[in-house]
Length: 427
Image (cartoon, rainbow, N blue to C red; front, side, top):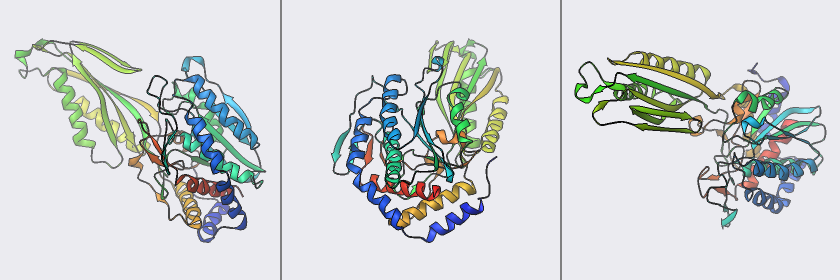
């Protein structure tokens, strides 16, 4: 069950952290980050130069091996979670240590990127003194290295001793293997053994983190109509394409003003002979200009901030679909993908801890970001089991696109903030 109220110890931690400045030990942690930044950049470069597109199984495992060595050196037990061959995914890297001190933390990242080997290469390259480019440099190899460097800064002061921390780096975040109960089963089971989940997807600068993320699901609209000569259109017959257009536009009219709710038709095909596949998403169609099209298929996504919002939207969409134009029939089906991570008091308390660390470091205040600015993420699979925070990774621009960049002037600051957050949660 999701925790609604903070424990007394955790609440006291939040209260005391809001007013404190850096302790002697925390100053040493910060100094450790600075001392290791050259090595951190080398690790980032080495990992970025390994292609690890979601379907490049060998590349993902090579990236995992690189990070595994770093985590083993920090005293973590490292294992590889393999997935069935039928999923065609590499699996996940898990590193853990168990203790009795402080909160039990789950630190989340992912090894894969959207860039597959057949795409144009983009190796790690400095663009100027504070900006580098490279495939996945921001989303999210920059976040993975940030996790490792934060832990390294703590281990140099022996501060990981007797802590309970699991690092979970997914191998298929950008395109999860199906069924997800298999590809995310181990992740969810391990999450239930922790108190707090911190995810290191891209940061929106120094002053914003994600205490909520929208969920994602899919919908498929199928419309049928009687095929006839086009001269008879509007005479008791409208055809499948007009009906599909009416339905999709009615979705927009009825639902588009709801905060954080979006629904986007991604594929729209109609004609006499329609062939459709959803894995991968593609379709073919043939038709003639002088016929009323008998079949149309529309496929899209639906994003939402809560399960209640998702279900209300689906009910409205079903009602619209049921009100057919003459001579047509239509049906809509829905498929769950990633659940939402709604804002909670527990998540808000984590924002306060990040804010305290940032203020104490002299980096300014941190506030919750707009959930509408982010897509769905793996942390949402476990949001109902523990307090969660995301957007703690590297900052930059152009994620998922050629020329993706990382902001190297903010990078050491984000590592320091993360190291301080982990320290205060586990002390």
